[in-house]
Length: 244
Image 1 (cartoon, rainbow, N blue to C red):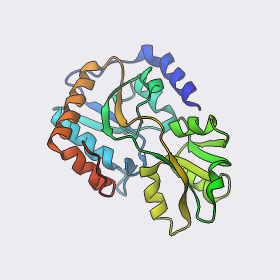
Image 2: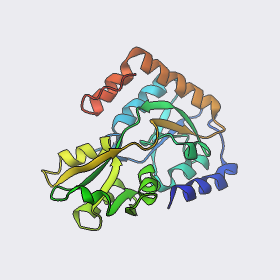
Image 3: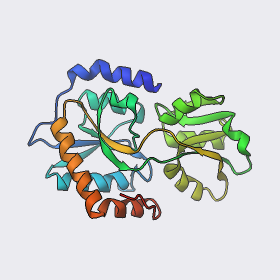
Image 4: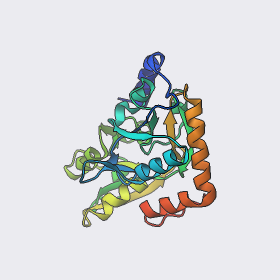
């Protein structure tokens, strides 16, 4: 599913959505398959940077929250249709997405996208068959380039495609690929140049949930002001200095 089709589908179901009302549990939607942003731990629970951050934001906003997982390619339509109330899933803020949902300010700075290939590959791997997760900014970038894009449902599937020869390389957020490369035992490597695509990562909410957005916006601002957001980013992203 392309990003355009994804957003069109969200627009169709928008009329069925209901706003998150005061006093109700806020359902935090994530993918659970994009470490270190979000993943499912050995206890079967949502874990990662966004889980810890989301719990802290809910605490600061005086909200009772629970976590819901959803496949990436339908994560926007299912927010709009009311299956959960937020998206915290490593989602870059883009003008196209902002036409369908609303965003808080970023809680993670714009991250370069990187190519990863077999360690035996050379830079030409970036111009051949390139894997990307469906409905991502990377998939759209490859489709507009001279390379051939092959899309997969999950990040794990894109890595598998490189390993089994279905793709010459994969393009994804550098932060998500770093752990994969580090854990590969030298079989995978970064190749070519990084590319800048999209903006920072923010929390998505329905257009109708302005009050909920404002509560989370204030909580994010408070974490930037007291330095705790920088500390949390450094914890989950190998000491990265975000500069908030």
